[in-house]
Image (cartoon, rainbow, N blue to C red; front, side, top):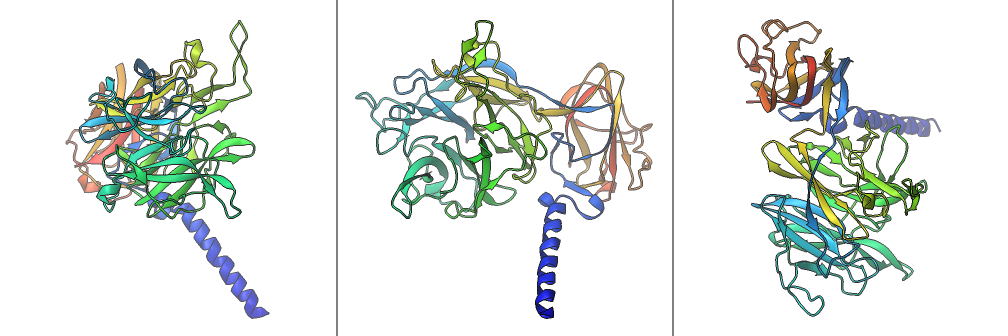
Length: 487
């Protein structure tokens, strides 16, 4: 009996050690004494992960600037229920995949291409017939009428260096497959392609069978984690929500886990739009479409609608535990009454983002759902989703202890004409380091994506590499979006 108790205590001890170790070593970026090892990774201020102390500064969410409508789903094979789009950069072109057709008719997966992310064209691919003609941009449709094998067909380019050439592109889509009792069950099917145009089933069997799936389920190769990740629809406490599954080979997947949104209210997330940030692959960004089904009336005329929707912003370092500091909308419906209602498709962020200029990123969302759906473009400053923001009166913040690699500290910032930023480096005890103190710091003002921080004796901080330090920022009427140590 005593030996059994010892075994149980030993097993419990191992479990507790493993549990607390995994909690403390989240993303393997926090080491001894709570030191954040940021190396030379780009650090966005999307949450409070780097902050030790903040005085009169705050985190500010920056909404995308609404630009032009770049695409209308008005071809004969598209229509009122077109949507569920994704965008990607592929070599020297941009690609957009989307759903044509609709839930009540035959669905098609279509491809549009662009050189600049603004002007999109439908290539004539001549692969599938619609209305008696193959002069269209359809790349896939299911084997049967309706939406099976083509609903929510969402491709990605596989960056796994071990991926087979004939499977360089992969996609997930909705399917039906008999369970052990022979009854048809909704599942996720996998497709592969050598070029993103010609597709076939990876295998007949589904790859994931646990989930709701009736949404845009997304997958990608995680460069940082070196595995495939899938985000899929799942029901949770009577609401639509998101779960996560992982795989080393795209065939065998882990049991889906609910995403952890911390101590925030559980909201209806219709889609997820989760993707690693291309400039900082260790950081996940998510842009779920938030569904509000209980709001049925809009405007002074009391127009009855089927609910409302908008887009929100969230971030994570491990893909499972998410920061929802901002409960406010990232994408609002806007002035058009057509975007208030038809909530199953309006204001849905498109999965992916495109670098369309040196200083900007383009993101996209769907509007006008139920009439002639269209794609709206919005722009975000490079790294500019969230900033540390200081008012005219000024403010400051100090980071946690960090270690870094690189010769220069580079910041992405913006000030007014009277604003400024000064940077001080503190030692492990919080004392200013000689030659890197505030009195030696050059005052920075302007608006730049990459600005090297300088002190009176120059910018080289390599002597401090791998030593625990803190950064002290003194700011006035300024926004700081990201920092990075670089050579």
